[in-house]
Length: 241
Image (cartoon, rainbow, N blue to C red):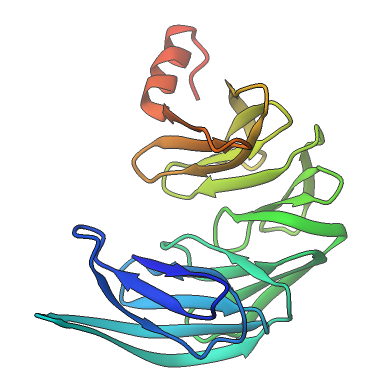
């Protein structure tokens, strides 16, 4: 497991024991985004200066010692105040952050694959596959950009954030009072379930590879739904997806 913060360091931990394994530093300001690849052998980081990097990571646990070896394979500058969205099984990173430009960057070499310009600044983004992605704009619109560069308005009801999972073929968006679940198995996403939240509304949502929806509201309350149970309920009502 890796963690990052405002001190410009990335820490590594044994997720089974909680033991700290070490850290790497030298970043410019806060590390805004980080993600392991599917093998856990490579880590992608983005810092406050806009430096996007790919690291080869190796670990060795020795009694009374913490050893992490990090070799920077490539780095590129994608602009300040940026973040990235990706999934461990996808080949690209999507760069965004308080601006209207979205850049897709290859994990292999850090080179730009494609770029997209929106009418408003992008406040949240999720990468659905290597090219297709959904964004939430400053005014709360949820827009899908498909592989054919077609923009499709999915929802305009004051959406706050969005996430997706290419393994479960689902997308989840946070609205004013509820979490909306969407299927991404078709060219145009369609709503499959609305998950009620507390009166304070959700602040963030994630989709796990194991089939769960995890939402946190503005007071820190965590809600978890099992997608398998939702599918059974929809099938019972003849509304399966």
